[in-house]
Length: 239
Image 1 (cartoon, rainbow, N blue to C red):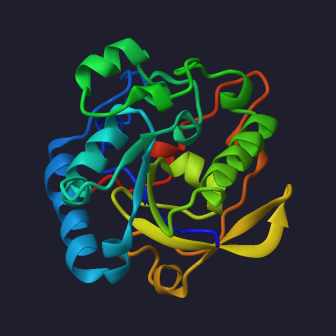
Image 2: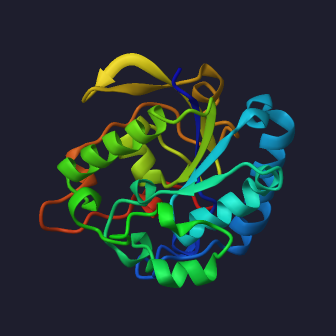
Image 3: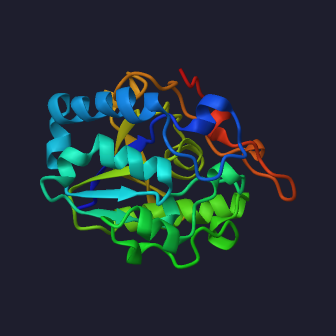
């Protein structure tokens, strides 16, 4: 049986607050690292019974998502819930703020995680990772296929607003908010689509911070020759 998936967007990072897209692989702000991650952790641990059943945490190997996972889901890690880092879940554009850091550098910075699960090409922004309609579609299929084939019953994923919306679920996410999905019967490119639980759909995210509605991949999300504006800062209220 396919797993239930809790999709989480990282907390506020410095490029979200400053709208400075030139910051390379930015870390969380004080607000994101502290208040937002604390709120997320407390809500998941004490107000969402499903979170007690999480058996795997999948994380984009970027600094802001690693920090969010550590601070927001650390209570699960302390219980022994494993973490897998996957390049498929990184952000979309090739702007410095959306481009990861070299694996050797991150291994030293985050030695508590197993970096052997990350595509050796990371942080490449071409091929499967290019911000084109084809690239976003293929990477979304790869990510959903990976999740669909996992044996765990409940999986938490910490990723990014742009990738979550354009390639996984057609929903918007505010910083440190989450949504819950099952795999449905309708297929997208031979992979079952994600169907959101009414619990988070009606509220606009589990914390009620995210815009309601369906927002599918459109031409403005990518460009053949021009760099797209990072959704991380365009479609959000950093406060």
